[in-house]
Amino acid sequence: MLADSGLDLASLKPAESTWVPPVPFDQRFGWQAFYPEDPKTGIQISAASYRGKPVYFHVIGPWSRPWRMQTQSRTRARVVRDTTFVSGGFVFLLVSALFARRNLRLGRGDRRGAIRISAFLFFAAATSSLLLAHHVLDLGAEWQIFISAVGQALFLSSFLWLLYLALEPFVRRQWPELLISWSRLLSGKFRDPLIGCDVLVGILAGSFIGVGIHVSNALPAWFNVPGQTTIPPNPAALGSVADTLGVLVGSLAAATFPAFSITFALLLARTLLRNYWLSVVATGTLMFLINLGGENFALEAPFVLFITLVMMFVLLRQGMFALAVTLFTMMLLNSFPITVDLSKWYAAQSLFMFAVLLALLVYGLRVATGNKPLLAE
Image 1 (cartoon, one colour):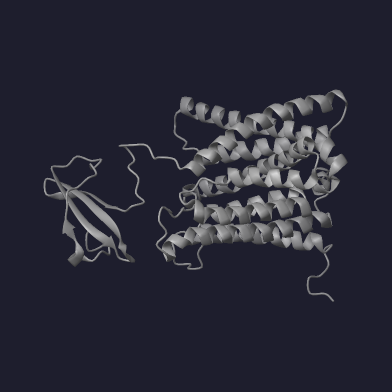
Image 2 (cartoon, one colour):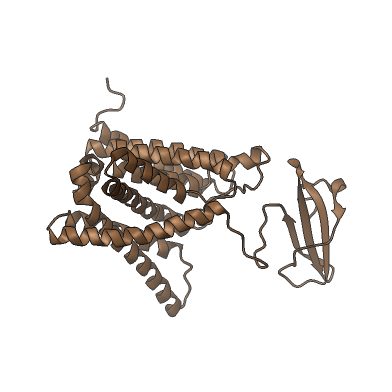
């Protein structure tokens, strides 16, 4: 095990094992060493055996977190993010309910569009939860899984229904360009050139954000960045076909809801501040705070600022539908593993993700150009 770990055996020093093995044992072992790629990073090795056979072997780095002994401490940035997210969610729910009630009493709002978009979110969220769930031959357990999936989907779809009814009349009056693509999409105009244009812009912007996140994720592998743990892909994206489809469908739901929430935040800020650029800055600040929560603020802040600027530019320049496509592209690029080495065991999941984005890209290009030959004059 020591030889297969890739460590320099000559640098190992016996030490007391500090982690208790999660399996039965009658003898424990411990060593101290240094990470091969970075001699400055110290690591520990904890091992154990039972009746002469090895039963436990663990390489412990500075990034390792005990999974049973203590809870992980939260950084100040993560506390700010969680507080902003939860408090903002309650405020949005209350204010959107008041605005939606007012619009319904005055006969305003696109009710058919609200029902269609909320039904789509309900179907996507419920399907994703059912695909990702662990199913067993137990009707009682399966019923609980179904109730949980439907309950979460109902909450999200009802929340989105309120958001749409609350913001649609106001945005249509103040910023109609933000809703043009959504209105055409909800009316069934899937071959509208503006929709294709927004798809292309969304994929481009989402790819920029995805690359930026991957660059920040790779920095600890290139440099000795203190307090920064590399973030792996979504484990479900590495699972079965059902899990992979669940991640894909879940990304549709997870991209739709934030697009409406960010637009509603912009509307709320404009209503309170009475100034266009102040509302834009306030909305961008809210997005910046919600996207924080990492371990190294100095490293994370520039990338979060980059993400915020790109998303705000897409929303103000192209509209809400383009922002939803941006979020969907970003989520796929960060949920699925990315590789060009077809010998990797996860190459199929990577190719599947690229195939989905390529199909969406071709659709956007064909629709945006009015189905003209791509190589025509």
